[in-house]
Image (cartoon, rainbow, N blue to C red; front, side):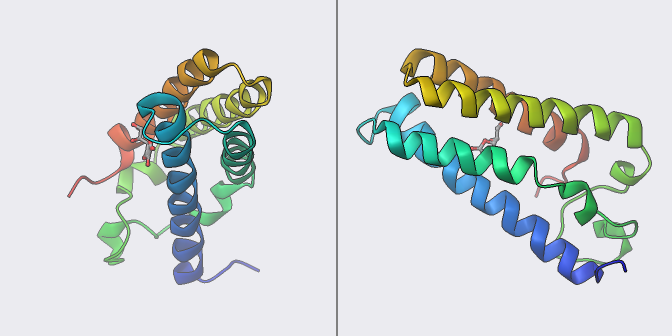
Length: 135
Ligand code: ASC
C-alpha cells in the first residue's frame, strides 16, 4: 500500500530537518569552532545523518508530490520526478558521502572530518541546485 502524499511529505521533511540539525552540530564543532569539539557528539550526529540518508527516502517521493501539483509546503520541482537516472545518481553519491562522514567521524581526525563535512554539503547542494525551489 502506498502511503498518503501528506504523510510522505511530512516524513521526508522531518528527515531533512533532523539531518540539518545534526549537520549544524558538526559545523559548529569542527568547521566554525563555536562549540568545543566533542568526539562522541560528532560521532552521534554523523551516525544520524548516515542512518537517515540510508533509510530509503526515495519511497517518500511518490509521483505527484511536487509543488506544482498543489502541495504548498514542499519545494521539490516537477523535474525531480522525470529525471530518475539523474536523481538516482545524486542520491547514491549523497548516501556514499554520508557513509564516509560516519566513518571519518569515528576516527576523531578533525581535519579529515572537516574535509568530509564539506564533501557531504556538496552532495546535499547537488540536489538543491537542480531540484529544490528556492524561495
Ligand atoms: C547543511 C544543510 C544543508 C546543507 C547545504 C549544503 O548543513 O542544512 O541543506 O548543509 O547547505 O550546501
